[in-house]
Structure formats: C-alpha cells, structure tokens
Image (spheres, rainbow, N blue to C red):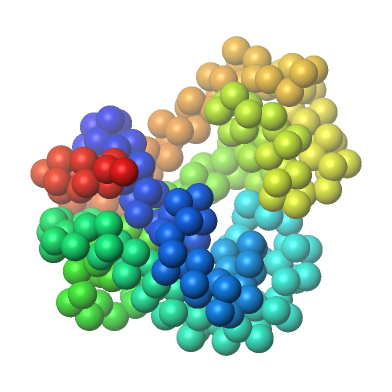
Length: 257
C-alpha cells in the first residue's frame, strides 16, 4: 500500500473518531450526553474509550497524559459506569454520524478494521459485536484502525529511544506548535516537560527555542515512515495488501464539512 494511501486512511479514520472523543465540532448528541452525565473534559475522553478495558490498564494505554492524571480521574470515571458509558457514547456518536450522513455509509472499512488488530484498545474496538447499524459499525471499525495506528506509532517511538512525553514534544514541534504548551494541555508537569526538552536538545534533536533541528525533523519523518510500514504490515496480516478502493470511497466522505 502506498504511503499516500496509508496517510489518507489514517486521516479518514481519525476524522470520524473525533465524534466519539473530541468536542471540536460540538456535536449536539455528544454534548447532550456530557451535560446529562456530567462527564466533561478528560473524564469523557477516558470513560468513552477505555470502558472497554480493565481499569488496571487505563494508565498504561492512555499515553498522551501522565498516569497521575488517570489515577486522579478514576473515581469520577468509575461513577459513570464505564462499560455502559461506552455504549452511550457510541450511540451518541452514531447519531451524530447519521445526522451528518443519513445515507448508508460505504462498505469497505469493515475489511480493514476487523481481525487481529494490534494494541489493546484497537483490539477492544475490533472485538465489540457489530449490530448491522452502518454508522455504528463504521465508527467502531474507524476506532479500531485509529487506535492500532496510535499503538504502532508509540511502539515505534519506544524503539527509537523516545519516551511518550518526548514523542509528544517532538511531534508538537514537527507540527509547528509550542512543545511546552502542548504538554501543558495534556497536563504534563512543566518541570518534567522542560527536562525532556533538555534531553532532546542534548541529543541534537531540538534547538534551544523548542524547534526541531534538521536531525530532529529527519528523525520524526523516519518515525512516521516506520509507523506507516507497521500499519501496512498489520493490514497485510488481515489479508489487505491494497486498500485503495476502500480509501477512495471513505476519504472524500470524511473530508466533508
């Protein structure tokens, strides 16, 4: 599968997944759920995705925030009855998707996101029983693909010698954002982020102003290529050597509006 196709697939899956755990588009169905259950911010983010897993695995799986934040939020997440909350979030996101796209969604995603999906959370979404509701099933397949890529991306970073926070800092700079501001957004302690920035600078990957050096940019681009390679291998293991037909049907739909 081409690199362009893999990136387009990742962007398409990520877009639909935002209905479930990102409020950027202010979907009324999601907002109604949050208001009714009092599950604002990271409480919604955690409970709507991780209720599929044993609680003991939550901090290990959510790698974009410090484990201490997960521990801090666990009491409130427990009150929401995580497994039930996942179903409610799926229902709200499916309703939002139906409102946006009332016609039946294209077939194809189910061939990509089912089977031996790598990573705990991706595998959990792949294992949720499908009901035949095209929007709900489409959302589940998208979540499986999105979380599999995230898992493989972090694993690639680990093998490159980067901590989760270092990967976040490098990625922020790679996307022309402030590394320290992004780390603060995800509740990482400032002193920890500054220490990791200094370590990256010592490796010659970042400059003194929080930007990537040529070496750092090359390393981050290499990591993206490695992630693409691992995703392609995971798809091939499920019998998908070329997903261009599915991507051509799905990607334009998800770029709308």
